[in-house]
Image 1: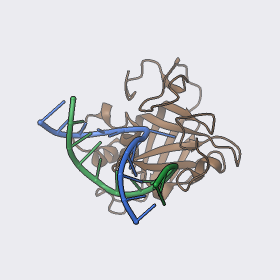
Image 2: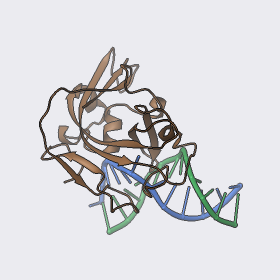
Image 3: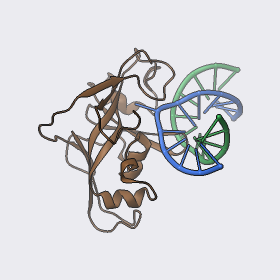
Length: 179
DNA sequence: TCGAAGATTCTA
DNA sequence: AGAATCTTCGAA
């Protein structure tokens, strides 16, 4: 599947006019509720994790380490927390805009991490809770038939919950955050 | 109200 | 290997 970003480029890194960015989802991680100690929802509902308890198919964007936004897509029915963290994309369209937003970085490193791809796609908390199942500023697209192997590993950057193999990536893809 | 940690990234 | 950087959370 793909992530699409449509923006009107109002002096955003000097991008003018209508701009569209597209990336293929090549790495994700799953997060759940009170049964998942690595999840933001582990200790119940808070202001930050509210979207995780909301409608499925919506964006959950959070800010971390004082610098970075991370993009999740919610997965479960209302009242049941769950989300998928988008960890890496393969850039497909709008490469020039991404290069503007992440200067001095090779194309391979444009979107190969959760904080990097939000920077390259100009995603911040203003897009929190947006419906990603419908065309709009940020949405998910079916990518048509593809053939690839999926690798499952431990999730990255967590303390607890390492026993779960809930990180998934496209085998051999060059845009993975780490091998 | 305050202290600590964090689903990270960049630089040395 | 270590700093940067600030929001969110939970305990006091």
